[in-house]
Image 1: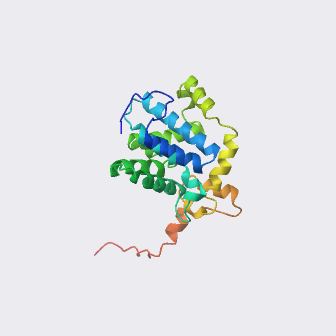
Image 2: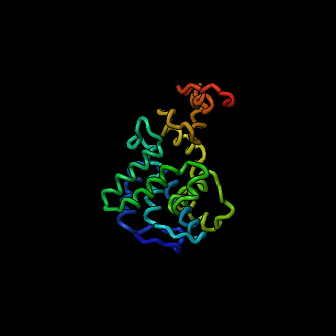
Image 3: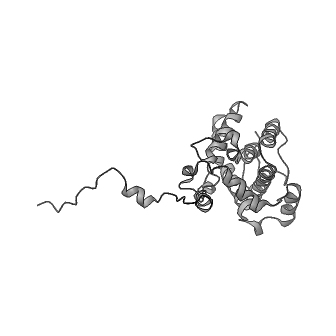
Length: 222
């Protein structure tokens, strides 16, 4: 593994590990999710370079390649968040390549937290960068700060063909069969919009339903 803060822009890691990750993504993913994952890596790597972060391009690439695999039926569980499914798939993949546990955990956390607002940016560079790459590609966060010519080069190589509507459709389909797993995440809004009658639990109601009884307030001791 080579840690870098000067990775050339718009270049994938040229390693066996990266190639095998690409092959898995290509075999099991859709064209839309494949292109999305490639853009996420390239956006994230350039953001890391711009910020002068020292990151491992292989780890970041594997995280990008696997970050949405949990949306694919082959990797999807019945009762885990799709992000966890993707993280677990990446762990299994990396564990067969003699990768150190700390590095595996970094990839796992990057994938597991890539849709969690506000937290990844304070974590290790690979975790923070995967999240920022996703935010740029899906929501356009940081669009104006990213070099326009490079952005156009990346999108030309990995097109956003009907991406907005297509991504919403494919994204929701990846967890529509287990809406309860979206509680407390941004994904709950998808279920509320597309599943008739679905309402994500309210934390206030859950607190009130706790089996613990409240103690009666006692007056001051005399």
